[in-house]
Amino acid sequence: MIEKSDHPNMTKPVQSQSSRPAQQQANGFESVRLAHQSEVVEDYVELIAELIQQNGEARPVDIANRLGVAQPTVSKNLRRLVNEGLATHQPYRSVFLTEEGKILAEACAKRHRIVASFLKAVGVPEDVAEHDAEGIEHHVSEETLAAFSKFMADGAKG
Image: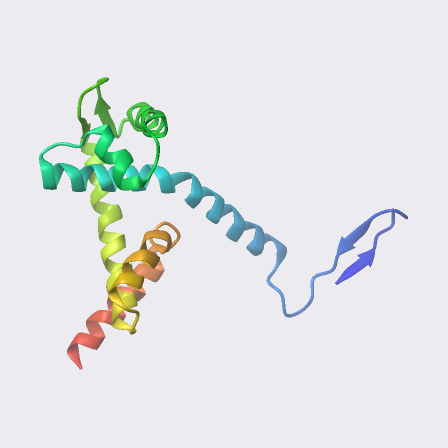
């Protein structure tokens, strides 16, 4: 609902009783923006760890192919990972994760496993669950992950 403000050319939103408080809504939007900023970093470290596990190394060309992006995009994002202390990389060489990068990659992989497992447990087909988990994993809270895990553990008992 919109209401006229004291200023003749301005309107101000009026909080309806059924909607969330403005600060709560703003906090929600802020958390989504922050999650979007970390998505690329998380996707890269998770993929680098996977490539190292599969191939013994993570080459930029393999990263580009797996993510479906151009080499310059990979180079830009690898610089970001190096600057954030998550990876080491020399031009024309493989990429390796620092200890901090390995910890982040494992946390991301764990979140992905929990979300994908939950989605499959509630009947989402495996290919759809894996696809959807790629987006959800970046936005899910620790509380929600714990609830997903509890749901699956309780379901396994009965």
